[in-house]
Image (tube, rainbow, N blue to C red; front, side, top):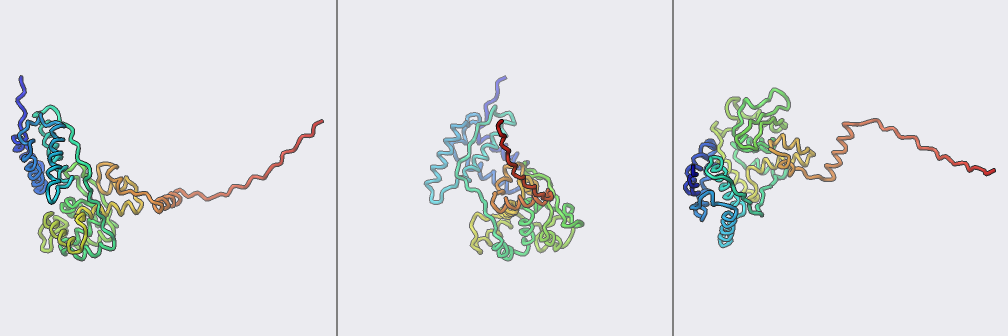
Length: 315
């Protein structure tokens, strides 16, 4: 039986977005993200190409055209934006492959030069930031700095996941839909515990607005952006930077990669590795901790006495 022809990207886009809405029903921002990136792909020559004709050459041609167009604009498009479009195309092709619409998926190489957001909130700026954010989001921001939870994980945190009966207490983070989201237990710092103890009510969601309503990611981003501009922080300082700050402080405190991975819920050691920066001070503390843990009373060896060799007298 002859295989039906593969659909074009434009034809497949309807089914793709329908599946995205089902997979990300609780994530309107993710749905909007894919809608936006797919819309951009559909303005290119890839739109009317059949999916099985979108090979490495076609993808490289798209990257060249997109990069050239970006360089002509007054405000160039960053490599990160183009890479998000390529990631959307990759997900669409993988979905088509899993549905037997195409036989294989081409390799899609992302553009180099994408700048990672690695802003770390310095202790001297932390107080300024927390004092400047609206009172309704201050407990959440403080909690993110001290626990390293993802913003989405904290917004979904419910009181049954919080243990304040024990000291210092801990929160249990449920595994999310994302493959890099793992179930884990995060101990509380004294400040994180005090923050939770100061929140009224012990039912439903932990973090709410001052009037008891739910906190929305869009509102948090908007408020954070206004505070960032007011205080003169760089654009790289996003809400996710609070989690990155937690990981960086863990690494600077001498935590090993496995500990960082477990506390932050990373899917691999390589992701957690970027928070570990060996230094002379960290190395010294590592030796001291080893010495304390495996201390053995020092026994100074008795120095060997020099033994003079006696010359034999020949007969």
